[in-house]
Length: 436
Length: 108
Image (tube, rainbow over all chains, first blue to last red; front, side, top):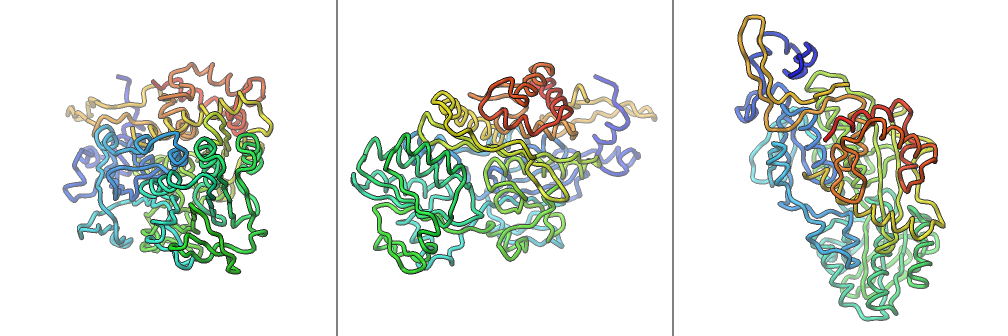
């Protein structure tokens, strides 16, 4: 055992006054929070166990094992949106993208509560759960992901989504869409209707089109895929189009927003038809309608959203600019130049964990650094990627100039194959970084 | 740069002569909050926690600092071909690459 420096001794004992005799007696112990007394190294509650929340919980424990961490997550199992397109394409089954919270509990001493937060009282620093019980916190992190703007499309609601799925939250919606694809006739039409910016996973709709095409090419080769976009351009566009031309010539047609003449504004679920602003109808065998989005419901309940429906935060720590001691990470937050991706959420979760741990340990938080890496599969052996490295500049998260960017155009088959292999490696690494 | 980040069990002899045993809760190894750890957390998304990759992305946990530093510098200059790593390495200064290399060299 190395000599313990005074500085490390102070850190070990926690923030403020720790070197005093009193501090020495207030050594944090397991279960301390349960007594109802303040934990010297903080009681942190995290709502939402996805890429942001699960990663944040684990890294908080790594940076500050003495902090009591509670993770509130509605579901027993977590189904990832990343790689759900591969399930749609028939490359993996649902089990592959389904994870649980056992190791976070057992290995990292995180208290996982499968419950739903229904209200937050920022003044009392207290959360009310669905069953009526309350959980107190010193710092609260919410990582609620997205909710849909159901009011944006006439006739579209959770019930209509059973026949016209969004599949933009993975799980039963993924299975509905997969079954529809399996049931459609050869020579049929599939529509994907992506929303305008900002939305979760910017390359996602186009990877989805690729995975649909992979399945249809091998099973129903006379079928067509029509992308009715709200936008005039999209993420990794050149790379996707080059890949489609190479692997699925003539199968995927992309209609940009200005050619479509408005957005998808109305749905008739019974007729399997969607309508544009000027009531132009589009009927198909399978329709995947991805509605406009906003921060997850609890962010609205807790008064954390701006007029656009997203959460403004101090981009250095992710503390809300609207409520003290509440932090928002992931898709729900406004995180400068970072996209709304699982990887970005995970990166934000680590920065937020370090900021909160530093606060409770009474040490300085170093300058943060953030990253995004997203792979998309166009075919099983054809992968492309986008990377971004981000720093704080004048209070905003900005891309480091001259770094990041997308895979090269016109790369050879070996390059695309390597990126497809790394896509799978990426998935296995990031999910293990979250959950084990 | 700390060599042993973990203080799982620590015997402290206080000035009064009182012997205290401090047991950190759980068995989680504490990672010191410093610039190297913050930068390296970014790498873990693809390379696994502490650089210990479970699958196709190369494992970097416990590789020598010299190897990691040189590899990153070569990715950055383009001397070493890669897929995504050239784009990542370009985002870091010499000093940041050194801190990242030192961090992963101490991991298992």
